[in-house]
Length: 479
Image 1 (cartoon, rainbow, N blue to C red):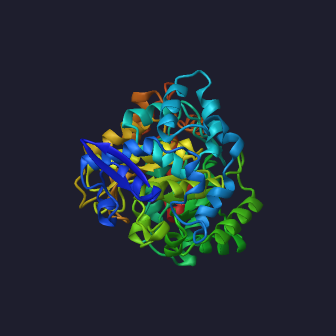
Image 2: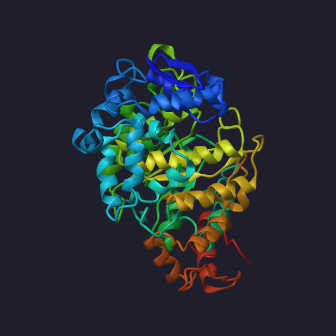
């Protein structure tokens, strides 16, 4: 039992799961699940009670029952008690103070990196509920999470992008045109990743072959991915397809992952198969995960100990704990993609995006964010610009970009290639170093880091549009 008094009223909370839910900042998904605070006073009481919970309590009281959930068991098995030692005597409130005092030290990156395997997802989620957006940015910006395959993601002074050339008919010409558009504006250093409209293995194989031909033909130091189910990717790897990254959407409970049709054995198999291919040139991180607050609730997999609903942010961070086990190259949270039923408006989306980035990086996970919203959410372009600016300050590893902000296949709004060019310029950030060297070599980037206007007939676009891109499209992309 947990309790605190606010305004002369004593509030009680019967479990850690209940306490975490009531302490969460307001969001529509928790109200839908029935675990949100009923008033600001009750939320303040829960946050006060949560601040006094010893961190060791999270190792003995489950939020999601370890006897019934393989994600909980994996998280506990991976917990590093030696790394936990520096903060093992602290409460959640004490951890908040420790993080804020540590992040200003000259050796903050080393100290926080060493701590990461000692924190469980529930500890990270709990401390975030006591922090403002500014607090989380201060700590997140001091963290360093670096991964690599053909390009290196997360180095200080860089902001990478996933180039997302989706097409509702999986038309190779459209995919090629969108890819060319993105490359000409310096996007694609994290991954060139297509969400296929079809789950057909034949379609996925054709896109994998085409993207790999384009990448290798233009000698682009990046990785490609077709975001299909992990079992399809495993079969295609067995068949000799050019798979760089093994992708899968995951969630923070076994029940929610059952809803995705995925389990730990499948992830183990994909990770082992990808390692055997060894297609990376500067690193061996080859798993790619996607998550999003509300995914567990949307599949009915959000219940914890005693059948109590667990708040969506804690479940989201548990997904990062699962991902961490597989040393991924990338993890992106699609922060506003699932809709206003889970994150109602721009205010909730912005807070969630910063929470996700902070908690993932605190756990040592290479975070990226799809800064996005669905067309029926109470959000707009200004909210996305605000979130992108805050994420740049928080040193997120990468963001997702589509042509003109409108993903015509998935039917939602994300960032444009132009948005990232502006963010890099304002913050003085560069692409991943291998990708930047390629941009310079093909005449697309100036010495000041700016993207050059090469027109439609310059040597760079001619080489791309009439060469590897034309092969992908089945003909020239420009006249």
